[in-house]
Length: 165
Image 1: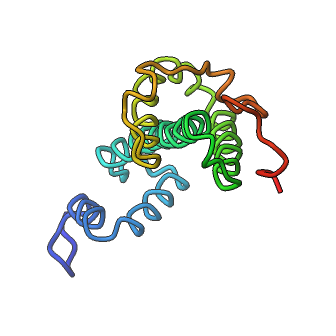
Image 2: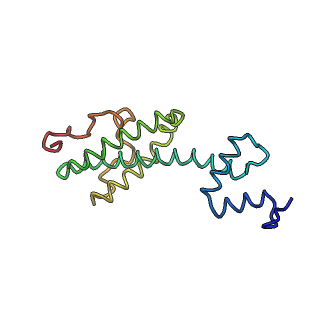
Image 3: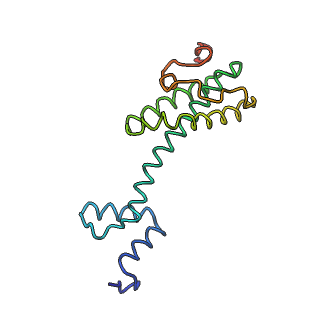
């Protein structure tokens, strides 16, 4: 059935809305779900977006761990440059990563599987920010997941009071 105003079918209108005004599409889909009007759902795009949300959580986990590992490497391999900013980045990334895992516990098994790839990105980050040669850093992650997440773990030397102040 075509609408008199546009000459489009409701399905075409929904697809068009998805492509032209994503926010409006999301609100419409939520309203359709709320009223349990299953036949009106834009299932192909809804499925794609739900899968995308899961992928975003994994990507956020990888990004946070990359930054955390990069800063742990910087802390260990460039001790003369240690600063409060690095310390705060380590602390914030630990806290935010743990919170992400509490909200998404099914991502925990993914950590072990992805650690080496995440480490390689963290190592690249450390190389870029320290200007140290790549060979300075181990090829494999020198830290266990327990160490990476443990408050108070700072490879090399512990955080000193002068960095904390």
